Every structure is written in C-alpha cells, then in structure tokens.
Length: 117
Image 1 (cartoon, rainbow, N blue to C red):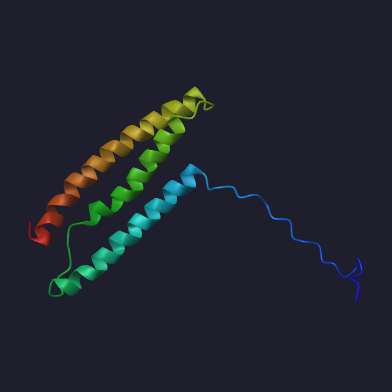
Image 2: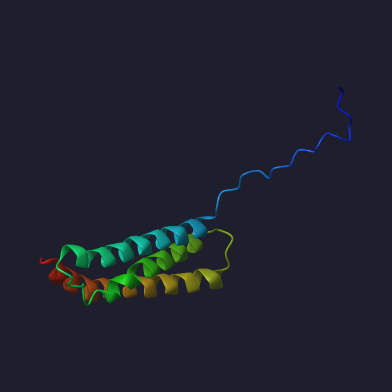
C-alpha cells in the first residue's frame, strides 16, 4: 500500500544543543557541594555514637561565598562589561574573599575538634 502525503507526520525539528552558561554551571557545582556537605553532616552521627558536629555553621557559608567570588571574577574578565560593573565586581570579589577567610577561620577549628583532630 502506498503512503499518502497526508499520512506522513512531519518530523519534529530539534533545536541545536546549547550548553549552559558558565554562571549556571558554577551555581550547579555550588549546589552539588551543598548536597555533599548536608549528606556528610547527616551521616556523621551514625559513625560517632549519635553525637552531632557543633560549631560548623560558618563552613556552610563557604560554598555560596566561593561561588559568588568565582562569578564575580568571571564577570570581571568579560571584555564587554562597563567600568562601573567591573568596579563593583572587584568590590564584590574582595568582600567575598574576606568573607570566605572569616568563615574558614571560624569553622575549621570546631570541625577539627569534632573529628577528633
């Protein structure tokens, strides 16, 4: 039996693959790091007699701050940005670097104490 033109279904046109922007990738990796931290924090009591880690809350700010720092540095390197945006990204990068340092200084000693180090 011959196919009639009406019976043929038009093929769906597929859009070409476009990868995610670098900013979206950075945010996705920040989410992955947060999930690993949450899983580790929830599994810790199972292996240490039901005792939770305390005082490690500043460490949970580190992935977000680091992600924001990387986004600021990425935006800073774009050649088509205005000088005012570049200046604001420099300020943001400096604030993020200080915040990351403070969070690590406040969070690592309780982590080492909780892990027995």
